[in-house]
Length: 128
Image 1: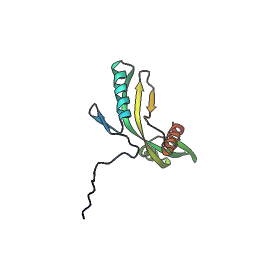
Image 2: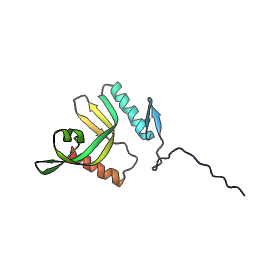
Image 3: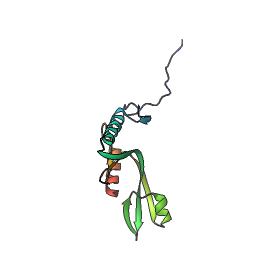
Image 4: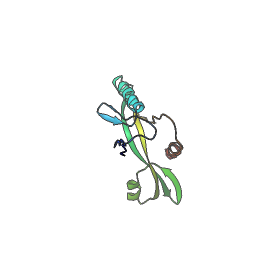
């Protein structure tokens, strides 16, 4: 007797998101690709300057004069300045949007929130 099992080497997203390509870039979900399209339309309308996607943001605890401070300053910069620090985690922001007035906004595109995401988002908010 023979048994047959179909094996697919492609990784599936644990949350069911479908990887999507838009504008030559690959996005983790259709929702992210749609948001990138919306941002492109806003650039075309001159509503925003530009955007970056999947920006790595380190979250560190730096010790200034012995006092712990949550920061998003890169560890290499802290090390160069001689500041003692502990690296907590890296947070990959879906989109950094540069507004015309010079402000920068952080955008996350999520189908639903997870406990780990909520924790990292709160750390990021506290470090800003």
